[in-house]
Image (tube, rainbow over all chains, first blue to last red; front, side):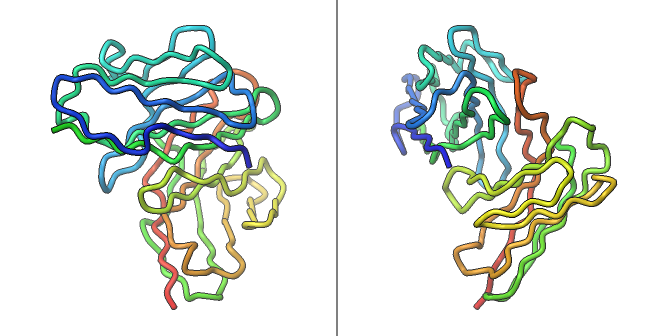
Length: 116
Length: 113
């Protein structure tokens, strides 16, 4: 299957700082990428849809000014958690689908964010 | 909301077949059935998907009922490394019709020696 990477794999930051997470499709081009958040013992929750060259579409209840998404190229999307607080501590996962076809979504390994 | 119903947990003996059921009684004609699994603290892994015909790949088989209201994922010879949460998801595939994956709670499969 296609390979999706995320960087960093884990990050610890102080409250009030901003953190950027990168999601890359390594062997295919992705016009659309998705960002999910997962709290302990819970399922994945879709946060937003990232479209290359246009604004992201956020799910209801997700603050677009707090979770900034940029999809500047067909292989890279970034999620920036601005002014992070302890309640933002979570496992952030991205997925990407190859353009065309049935666009099966492939997931990155996830980024563990801990806000102190 | 997720459009599928799965048992919360299942056990399976190592080396035996694991049969994971999924109900999707409100599935639309243009929706595929996708299966993913998530091993602890990792991103979900794609397993298989299908529309109405049974499908098989190197990982698993997918059996979809004729009315498409339910399906079963079969791991033919389960190993300890197959212990994971398995998610059944219905989704419109292709084009720009959102393509979103909405995750339910999944089935926690425990493969025991």
